[in-house]
Image (cartoon, rainbow over all chains, first blue to last red; front, side, top):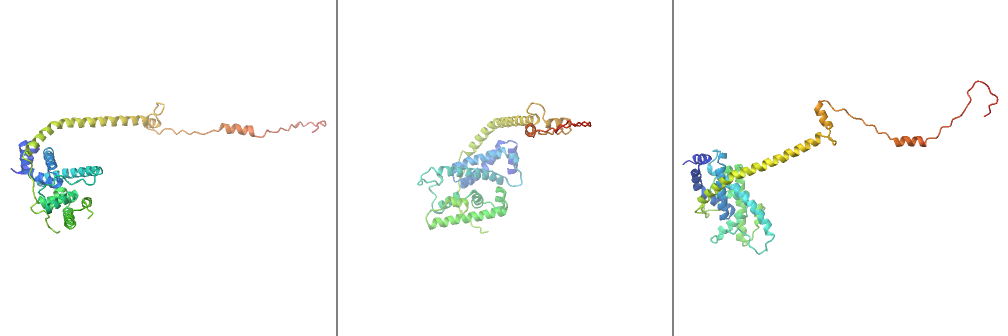
Amino acid sequence: MDEQHLIGLVRDGDESAFSEIVRLYKDRIVNYLCQLTGDYQRAAELAQETFLRVYFKAEKYRPIAPLSSWIYAIASNLAKTDLKRRRRAMFVSLDDLPPTVDVSTPSREASDSGLVANLRLALEGLSPRYRIPIVLKDIEGYSQEEIAAIIKRPVGTVKARISRGRNLLKKHLEKATGDGFAFAKQELYDGRY
Amino acid sequence: MEDTNLFPKWPRVAAPPDFEERVMTALARRRRELPQARRSRAFRLSLAGAAAALLASFIGLNVLTGPDGSPSGLARGDASGAPAPLAITEILDYGREARGVSSASRPVYLLEQVSFASNTLAKY
């Protein structure tokens, strides 16, 4: 069934059409949010909230962009808010932690090794400003125009952020391979490299 | 722009198996809670509106009423449509006036006969 028709039915309160949209997008949205947050459980919760917003805000959707762009925009905004909140909470709690405690994201999988582990850590250290366009482009496979529609920024800004984000990631990887795994997560986050 | 993908064959994750059921359960719960949330929001808004109206009326009464309860100049001016008369007050220093009288030198009166009739007996 056509996506525009589906969202039209959701607007009228059709739950089976909503269930169909959830079925179509659940894996993509959970994967996208997992790459952004680095936490699978948190990603599943945010994905659930994303779909609830799709249902309750369906009347606000305008068919000027694909439905997927609108759903990704909702998910991006939720992830951005969550990342900011968690970052603030991390700043508060770090003061109370002894310096030997590992404060990296606990969702890092044991199977991750080498380049993947380094990239995952570098991605988690990147500011949402760069992380969102990079994940959308390099992992989800969206074009720059589609990303511009999702994050509501000009295409030039998207290009610049992708380029800058990739440079930050490369610098981190060079640093990680050069002198072990010591890198300044805060500096990456602020884009000061 | 250099178009190099740093994430070739990046591992993907899938949604939990019961994800759809969880979403539909959360949807049903949210639909139940929504009217209550709306009522609560409406109650908070009406409470805030009542407080604002009370404050506005309090300020209005203070501006339009004088300290003795009578309508202030602003209120009288508004009622008649004409400008209120301007009161001019002149300060009088009665103390200074009294001091002036007490500290002034006393007048000396010279008693002189003003009769045209000559009186040789008069001596000064």
